[in-house]
Image (cartoon, rainbow, N blue to C red; front, side, top):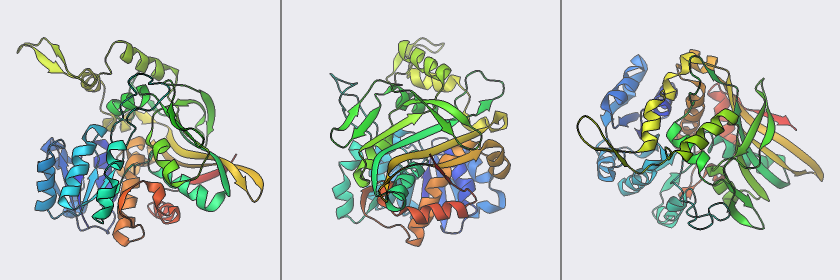
Length: 406
């Protein structure tokens, strides 16, 4: 297997450090818009980096990505960029005849008249519209294969296959007790992506209604997270699992709720009120004359890079899937989860907990594809594959998962 990794930010760099310890691939080309960033990711591997090569590429340039795939004979494209670049990378992989993996799907657009009742363009719609073409070509696009979406979807598949006879509800619940020394406000993940998913209308799935939307931050609930994290208030947020799980798992209701905290929610609301969540350019004065900039890009530039905060971070992050249903005629309720302690991930990999937790899952998936434990064609989510091989291999990577009866 020869892999083109596009994106050498926090998650991309963590992917290289995890993959360097595994032998299932022959080469990994690490490409980024900033060549120095790709080179730094490779250089940090030291003697483990002999299979890695740094390149420069513009992720929005479909032709350039296709050429890079062909020049290095890469048979897999792993997308570690933000969701703006999903479609050009997705198309480039298909043109080059490469398998495609990402950790977030193509962007949504709210319904023009009823944004908080009806779906407009849903997450992943652009990719699933091309599923037949991928299947006819015998090619695979594995979408949403990070931690959430990704591992959370694997948990949903595992619950359906091994833990329940009938499932009433699947609810992904994400929470943490992470703190960052020296900052009153410092997101632990890409603020661009966080703004996108938190301020868009959240989607809920119900079997007798299909997909529908609600108001941002709706239906607050307190969820008790394991391994010392404790109770965290969670709210509805737009997320891929709600679009993926119902395609392959029979459940009457599917939700995603994120433990953001009151202060974080109020900050996001203020950004929206001021128009600083906008992605379209606005013209601002500068010493060189008028310049067109995206307000959201300015917000991201003003905040610290989440990948650089590991030394200042303390605590744990938890990703998990809560499932309620029936087994052997009796009600059952479980929480399947994965916890990463920042102190451990920094000591072991030099990566902060949130980016490491996101990065480990696509590497596990790549290994399953390389060994043939996972096979498929078309545009598929993680729940389209057997869960047990993934969960067993995750443990072999030194990152155990847990299950709590509720």
